Image (cartoon, rainbow, N blue to C red; front, side, top):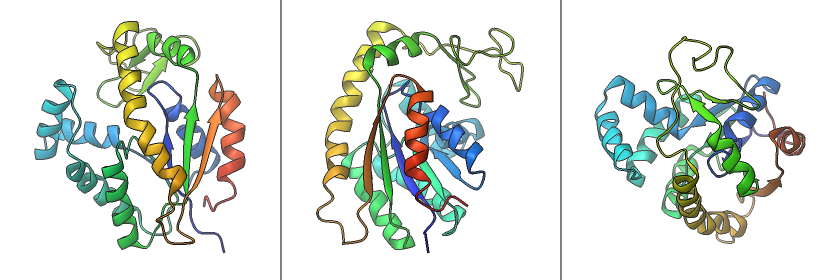
Length: 230
């Protein structure tokens, strides 16, 4: 009997994680996608203690402490239950976070099954970022080339103005990409290796390359439908 899918999706900013996650839910409505960024934004909007801390960290361009992030996501994972298939986006970002996640999933008896790495050329990612606008309150992202809002400059659902991130420019994004690859290289190696994981609990690792989400999607679907999605 197939176990519900428990997966991570990893990729640089602008690689299409959100687009592909949304498409997966369209094809498998029982799937839950859990975005670490969305969870933090919800805490910031609600003015929780974690939200106030996160707001300050985000303004400084830093990262939340590993154990704080794990605590936030633990509650979300527990709330979904053992029979819900899920895809986690934006966490872990470090090997320390990966180990904390492994520990949590072990206590839940829900080991990670799949790690999906999106391998998108940097020049493609850069062009997407320069054309990207977002709705700050919800995290909804639009691209003026292939996913524009119905009314230019305004969110489809709320009608509120869209914004560009201050660092969505070529120079700043080049630095973000360098930082991302510096952080992700050891993490990807951790998941590619996994020799210390108990037999039968080593997640499969796949790297999907393409310049467009429409190219990557069929490859991703071929991989994930080997697992239980309902």
